[in-house]
Image (tube, rainbow, N blue to C red; front, top):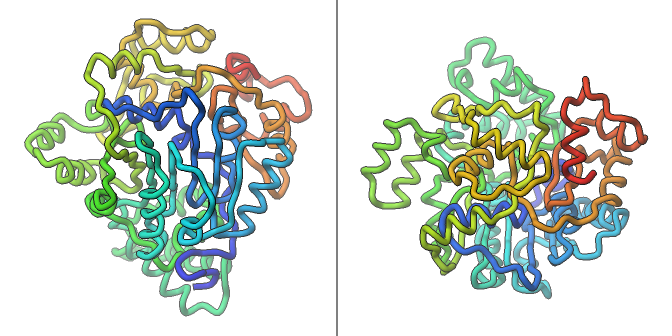
Length: 447
């Protein structure tokens, strides 16, 4: 394939994006929900992103976690160049980036890590590279640490395999490269589906490309479908790989998937309750969820918390608003249908957090539900200044290296409309009619 460097598309830079679920507080929350002790961060911590892309996630997290040491590793020099320029411009001192594949990364002079994350990598690389990634996790994770793997999953990708096969075969036959042959292949697939081609009629991605092409930029599609080793995996396959190096599944960084009452019908819950073996139950669960992408968190011999300690530590955790108040509908779409959670307890928590108050004695299930729905987010208790980083990112609006995110002092970031970023860049008042609730949202985060 054009741009293929052994096993990955290496000639077109990936998106400049931030992944909130890679933040330490988010991963700690996953562990606590599962009753697993997360890493101790009282004396600082270390964090590593394998396949860090353009380094936006690592840069934002480093800027918002002064007590952490961050490393990003990627095989594409253009990615690492961007990451280094971004962190230099924003004067972020506690992050380092390395141009290396996973085999070479094994030889880098790196510390032991409390967190190792790999988002959108594992099912795009060949078997030998997967082994190198696992070796890195095995050698470099501290006792009590957490590993995150985000990967394409079966059975949800099953109906898209004909689309993928078409793109691959047309790509091999094409004299063009990069965007050109990919765009032509996608156009043909969408046209074929519209003309009634049965093998493409049920494709999720073809429907998305037909109805919302603006949400799938070429850089995403090239990196999603062009790697020669691209292959979605069943959860049991990944868990087998991780078990070989002594890692046990903790939970999902897709927070709603840790709450059966939220994402599964009562029939599905009864069906799963009859399956005693954990991996088999999770596989069946993926069939109910029609799982397309898993965000799995693993640990190795981390201490188990009893029910009372789990509840106490979750209630003692810090949460912050994740979206403006007008965007909170107290209902969310799940694989089991629309799930409503409008209650006085939910509204009290949201109102208190929006006013900057701590919530004591809150109903735990309500807290977990609001977090899983994306209305509130796990956060750091001690805010950090993000003024310089946000100045840099706002200054890139409408430019070739635009980043549509705002860093939040509580250890994460929020996606923002370019118009809002322009207003902040230019020092203009935020238009409440155009961006309802954003003025209050930013104020409650100290911005």
